[in-house]
Length: 155
Image 1 (cartoon, rainbow, N blue to C red):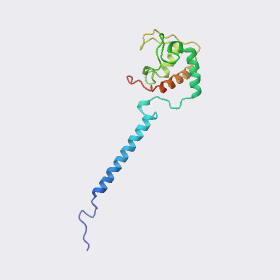
Image 2: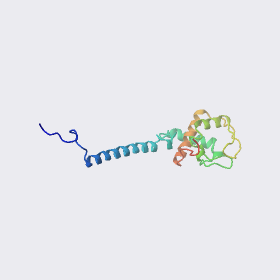
Image 3: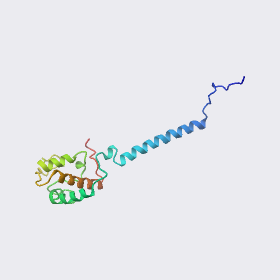
Image 4: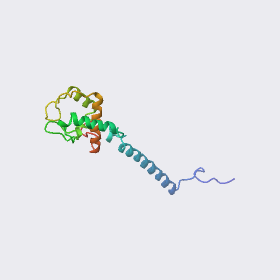
């Protein structure tokens, strides 16, 4: 009869194998963190929630023309506002605070001031919902270029 090793025939882990397991744990943790960071950075996480990363250049160009003709007089050709209208390059107008529906409503029926002291905005005649969508594409593209993705003060 052969003598069995102590421990029921099971190999006892060496210090080196536990370090190897520890390394695997760190690799898994780092991969997981990398996936989360990549998701946030490329629009899949909460920091960029609502941000389109594939804007339509034609819609942006058309939106810029429509904005210039219908909105710039109050909101500024540079989107930084004027003495008669607020700036769209402000976090208040980020998608999580004023989504596309807010722009549609403001154009269709006007809006009472609730963030600024510029007086009420009247409805804008002659713009279709599709026109407003293009204006929003233009505004969002400019906001994104300025690093405005979310209003951190608004859920």
